[in-house]
Length: 488
Image (cartoon, rainbow, N blue to C red; front, side):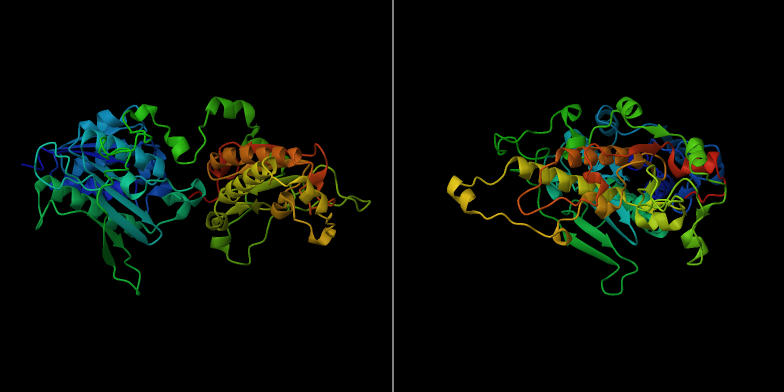
């Protein structure tokens, strides 16, 4: 009866959510709410087994697809699909209506939001994660006694990770890759932990929580290991700490909608209207026409092996190369294609010629340039005597600090077309590249001991390429230009 009367919220109907929902439904959990903003795609089916090829063809909502499949497993329970994002505006109402929450997501921002909503509502969280061939499971905000509305709980997500990871260090399952069996294993264990809490199973349902690490392919460590967690950070945690013991300077999390989760996670707030007006866009049909692309001119390296050859293009040239004219001079207008996907995705299949500059590398370059700009604006305070006694340093050109553009081999004129899998990361990349050019043009005077690299076209005042986002990315390219291009 405990399971029949229970209400569970599952955030995410993907690789972790599918096995969790399956076993919760099979166990007879009476009410399951599933929230997910995505639609089913063929590439999901290897690890998200509640979804079907038919659902991918129909572009069915994952929440609906999972709910329909789970209802066939157990038609005597209620499953409510919510085709929406889990946001600060709906989080608290969704969490408050459940007995516990399963965090089946793969990004830090949503994890912090789930955590804060659950702590404010007094609900435990079963959090799972999977990457590559490893996974982990932990019960957060776990009650340590059976008193109603107890405040005696284990640590929350902010207790374990007070600071969010840098965006460039974060990868989701689609970008980082994961073995489907691993997500199945972790999701199943999440369902087990939920059933243990709801039905109070096990030797001690109120034992302090541990972090379970799953490494089934490792030979140097056990397949399953547990790590003892630190207690709740009563004196420092912004969300579950004791208000009477928190420093006066610490702002408690009281309203989810007042929290700036984007800034906390190091992300920029995206104004899609601004993106549409400020980021130059090119559709895939025009992109293919400009580059003289013809269907079949892609290079599926991982599928074809090392013998695959780049296609011949007459308008788009590889990065850092110019087409020679009859006089042997480089043409002034150059067109290049930058693919900002992670390297392992680029090796699956890519357009040729294109060059792979991962978004993470661009982010790091921007952070480095911003730091350098701050350092130039706040130089060390040297006395006049020290300045007078400092001899001028003349460094040969061969020893000069290489410019950003020579590092990344990006031309300072012509056109740059930026693409990714779906056209989202490439929009951020266009914004970053434009800011990098702005910073380069602002930096006209070099620090003492450095000289300009006159061979670098980016050193020409005002020189910059026209940078375009390829709208829809490679998915749109496969749909509208070349159906044979591999979609994953």
